[in-house]
Amino acid sequence: MIPLRLVIDTNVVVSAALKPDGLQRTVLLLAITKPVSLFVSESVFAEYREVLARSELRIRMGLQHQFLDLIKNHSRSVKPSRPLQVTTDPDDNKFLECADAARADYLVTGNGRHFPKFWKKTKVISSREFIDLVAPHILR
Image (cartoon, rainbow, N blue to C red; front, side, top):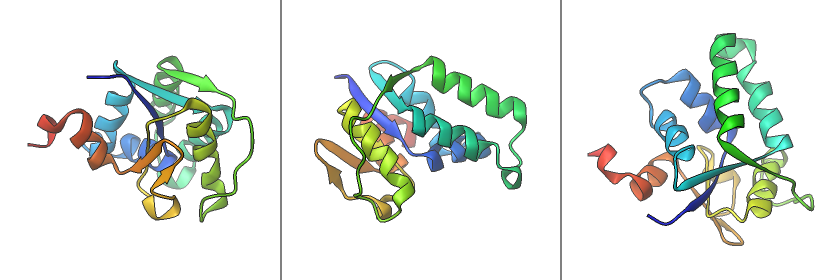
């Protein structure tokens, strides 16, 4: 398989924390496994940290730290060069900025309606589409 460059939306990370047997957990595990390269920016990582810590989600602090450490230790950091105003939800622009800086092949999200189908060379896809692409045998 050829190397893939990937950015993951916060909703995928949160779902991975909440549902151990869900597709999003598989996406996260695949995202940190070669030949996939996961990319984060400072603002994307900060949002992961902030949302995972929300009390209403009831994610154990230990699990929050495990996820953040996993992402931090198995991702590459990028610095977006310019702010974008592309998505229907302004808070989601940080993911396209990160994808742009990373020259990402894919942005995986559970909120595809907030994003354009493509941003430059980055295709916006769902968790299921990502798994179909890199590990279709998992869904059989």
